[in-house]
Image (cartoon, rainbow, N blue to C red; front, side, top):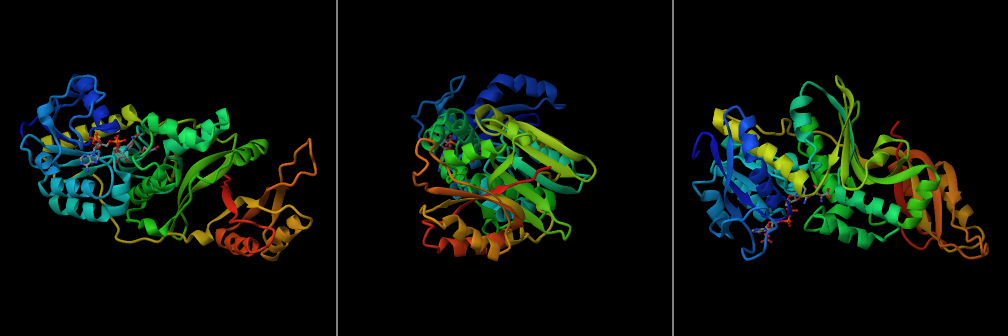
Amino acid sequence: MSNCNKLGIGLAGFGTVGSGVWNTIEKNGELISDRTANGVSLRITKILVRDPAKTRATTSAVPTEILTTDWRELVNDPSVDIVVELIGGTTDAFEIIAAALLAKKPVVTGNKALLAERGIELFAISRKMETPIFFEAAIAGGIPIVKIVQDSFVGNRIHSFTGIINGTSNYILEQMTLRGIDYTTALGEAQALGYAEADPALDVNGWDAAHKAILLATLAYGFPIDPKNIHVSGIEQVRPTDIKFAKSLGYVIKLLAIVREHESGSVELRIQPSFISQKHILASVHGVFNAVSVNADAAGESLFYGRGAGQGPTASSVVADLVEAARDLAHATRHRGFLPYRETGNLVPIAETTTAYYVRFDVTDRPGTIAEIATVLAKHAIGISGTHSPVNPDNPDAEFLDMVFLLHSCPFGKLTAALTEIESLNCVNSTPVVFRIENLG
Ligand code: NAP
Ligand code: HSE
């Protein structure tokens, strides 16, 4: 370490979050020093970028000599005590973090994709090198949910998490609802606001939320989870007609992450657009905000709410981790940070998870269409709680294209079997769109 209280930071990535970390340390560096028992002083001594000539939106000038395009130079720089990885992705970011750990430099990252996809390898290096990885910024932006699970709730058995943990998709759904704008326009706004991933497909296809849910589950239940084994669906299929129909029934559509331990010890983990009651507290989570409801045996139900993405909130979590890493170095504790503590665990097969459903069919409108679909559902013993097709009041004979069914609770596997059969009916033109209807109590 360069100095007991003065910590040199190697900042890999100087985009939305990286420049937020620079700004936060510039603005609140003295406050951080005052608030830490040993007067931690954080100083960014090296910055990795792709393009050193790019103009950066920082609140103070960045000395050009500390910029580099070579990550090895950053990791190996003797002035760098802690490495912050904020470039994203799962290749170069992996190399940077692995090299930092092997050099016994603690790591702070916001990279949920990397930890969910390749965390097993990185945590093994972390364990071997007794050098921690901190990742508060990886889940729910500015909400300190990692510390809550890992520290504040360490004495609890966690029954479940129910959350909205992707700010971009929450923003898009809300803008489509409030302003009636289309999906692509809303996504463009979320990108301009710095909420979206470099690859925004991850935000809208549910995988960014899935990566975070995997990390939450691993924190709570201790075993690594292979992303290939979980069921994820995103908001790409949500249409204004779904939003309107949900509203008329007293629901809102949210991209929900459910992580729940069953009595058997198996863990249910799924991400999907869901109808939730307008009266439920999660229905009031607007725009880029996230919320995670944690149900734990001793603490009971708690709700954590805050900005889930964007420069300031994410930088707040990164800086908190930096101080934690600095404290660790200063006190020469051997190891802190999270490690999976069980090698394996079981996931509940998606086919066995049970909820009610909203299913939208693209149909050819002709006499018998509803009956044909209903007959297959009846054959599979799936109850119908409602049906709907948009009727044009000016032309009641106009053909409709969408036919919506609301279905009573049944295992997802049973629904899938029925829908496979329905899809082969002549009156059904494409794969039915399914959203869950969650009873959140
Ligand atoms: P970003 O704005 O795209 O910034 C990425 C930065 O990394 C840029 O400075 C880029 O350099 C640099 N970079 C990318 N690949 C590189 C490479 N191979 N070699 C050298 N430099 C490279 O991304 P961001 O939004 O700040 O997100 C960074 C990380 O934080 C991601 O893992 C993301 O998932 C996570 N995160 C983001 C948010 C958020 O709200 N944005 C919230 C939580 C977590 P140039 O500037 O020269 O192009
Ligand atoms: N793209 C992510 C989101 C950033 O919108 O939630 C925060 O992890």
